[in-house]
Image 1 (cartoon, helix red, strand yellow):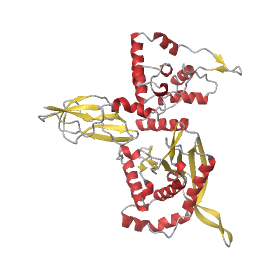
Image 2: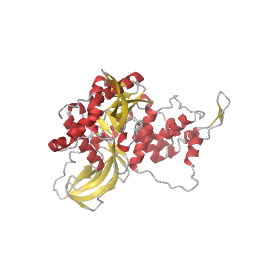
Image 3: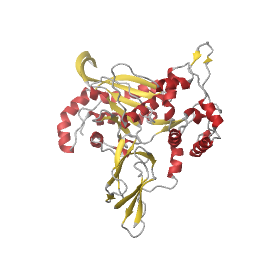
Image 4: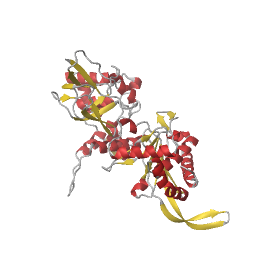
Length: 461
């Protein structure tokens, strides 16, 4: 008999952890090669993990809802082989579990403190305590936050833990040492300080300042009166909510608006859509036409295709366009068209349709939603004329297109102005005002509108 270790697979270049949703097999169950053992989730995408060998499940090492790093052993399988088998192609470096959280920490905001930060922004009179080093915006890796939550360590305690990591950041070693000291009683004085009632204070205007802990407590004790129905958020809705709040906390949003006369584009699509589907085997929607225009303008204004890392601007050379797609549940997911600038219109149409179909049928791979550099959302699909989209972090801009409507407009010609019925559409661009000024944002948006207005109605597909 030999034992094979089932490893948490690496499902994308930037995916370093996954959440266990369901075990299809339990200890003692037999399993065949490539048979599904469990379901996992990364961000918004669910996927199945197959067995790498045939045999009997000997041991399961993680429970449902556990967050597991890539490369970790999640189960062991007894096989009939005479010699021990290798761990499979999914095996990662032994140091993956120890190092990946520290590598990812720089790009993640301490999500556990999001509620406290929201309170600070809403209530200016709330007092803001500082840690001993004066830093009120310390970053914590997901591993540190998970350990803290599991051990009952509050954010007030975390703020007071001396960090030995880069720039004083709390590491796994630091939090484990703190928990050990706390359990042994050596951290009693520090713990009592962190949890002690905060005194009343007044600001310079003589107004009473409410301690943060009291505001948090009041939120936790919220009651609901009247005839209400309370619905628990599902996993995807929680992820979307956290992502949206994090984006608003990260980027100062500015939204610019314009409109475009897309009559030529609409008439061209109506003329060729039957022949296009017959020849290419896929439908031609408006989305690939919009993406084509966006790509052309990104090449003219590359700063739109970037991200921010503290005080550094990272301009992306790859143009990966995310497209917000509605799922049957009503939630939105953003599959990404990689290297969209290298695809012609037919290639874009096929990519758009394949990703949209996979999203609606829950068949997206984890890597399909990664590495986006700019996002398009079509609010017109639901009948909206325009919208104010929220930036998909860590990107710095997102474009929303509204419903195409026929309207009477003034048309300027060399022979004079006239009023005509035209197909009109509103566009709105939300952008990160830390690095995208109003002039650049408006110029880029106008450039996209011009590309759509000047669409060649005689072009071949």
